Length: 379
Image (cartoon, rainbow, N blue to C red):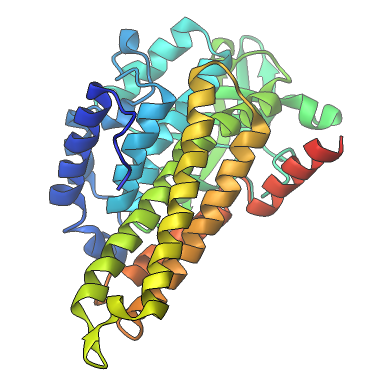
């Protein structure tokens, strides 16, 4: 578990509160959620009662107003329970962050008025033909009088089918490429907004992931976030700022894998002694712990920089890449430690391995993160 050596009393209390919630309300049900592939609304409502869907939203708008470091502490605990649930809960901050970067006070209040009572938001950037090429967007927003009319289809959208409000990125001037992308706040109940295909995913199956379709959706001009043409810049700044908290969830996956392996290795007897006493296994456990501690510190370093007003895209990219790769390595080793049982759904480690894989893919693949990092080194 994340140590509490440098935590404030408030951080310790919040961590223990969320840990207790995870142990009682998430871990006992995570396997069932995984099989069903459904977002657990009842558990979400309990999380909302604790304010966990509002971690970084300022207190003046009804949120918890937590800093990045505290949010990462709590996101790790949630990831230890179920990464899919943690992803959907955390997606509210992904939807909110563009507003914190470029939105007006009125827009932030409007967003908060929707989600604070117990709703989720979604960040609509990705399209089928785009993927890592986020600027390759076919969704358009055409100015007509004092409105914009949005048309297009977004793909792989977390909370796409259950969100009450969307942050949508669309082209207001295709001729300008990425400099022609703009950002908008779009409510779910606007005519023309619909939910497309739902993804039948390999992992994080408790998280709802769908297409979101916009057909002649009219939004007022005051729903434009920032200025026309600022959308791509806002999207990239958003992802830089949300990568640490998202990566904290992957650290939680690692920690759960270690917990399960230590428990199993103490109980499983082979050649007359617990496998934990066989050096081959013990050293695997040690390496899992070393890698997890390193990943945790990279995440916390990125979070602390942000709490001090320093937004370093290379630090965020490095933390995201290392943590995603570590989660995959640690969970793969966890399956190996449990052997045949690790490959069976009777034990949770195979699910952890499936959940971990997405952290090398979404919010910018680890290959794209390496492009960012190497580009900075060679600039």
